[in-house]
Image (tube, rainbow, N blue to C red; front, side, top):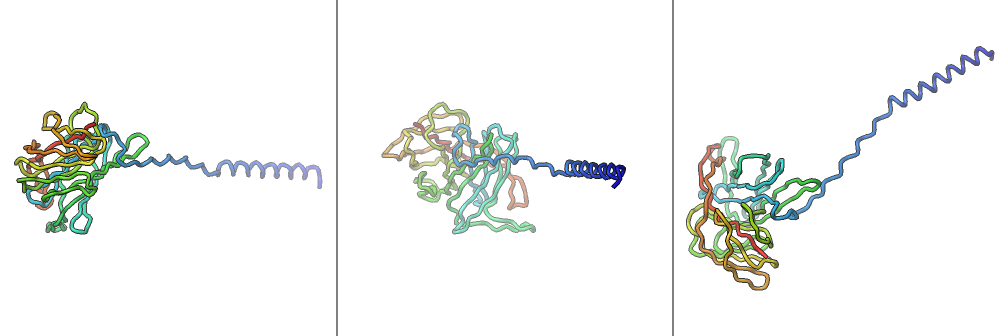
Length: 277
């Protein structure tokens, strides 16, 4: 091979090698971004002072319940699942609330279902249920899970840690926990606050018993301030005898069973009651 041909061949080889490097450089797939670490999910770990106040209220029609949310904290949104047991079937609904919003936030949930034509069927034999609230704080997803029970004579939550034996009372009522509490409280909190909600302004009387090993007292919110109640304690159980008229809030709800009509209604509430150390 002549010297000229050798030079040409060398140039061709160099061009091919350079082109190959350029091809690899420009066709190299970009590396995928490192995925963000999954947020840790924790249940009932958020300090009670940082929890939103959530309550369910019965309706005199027995066809729906009303959710009330207050003191949600500095959050972009939270999701609330309401579940209840109707006979042996687990029913419920979900709502996502974007914040900030007008407070207290109220929303009605049908105890049943409606067809597209507007015909509704309603659940019967409703006994107990749970409220699950999901919210994000920094690198954690907090799930708050609370129990409630529809009062029908002597009643208790499914874990048997909250019980109520009413006397001289036959109105619609719900006994349950509330995640957090209303307003500010200076005492040392022993366990999750609880409450009784009603569809009537009539006084509620009876004996409430809670199981809370750290609690030595109970403070009651009457709509304006907290005050301690007289308690009896035996082992890890605390009992209070009540004869209290509920305080109230006026709200507007949407009646899904009435084709979305609005209704001005009054929510009646005893509490929250806060177990204290």
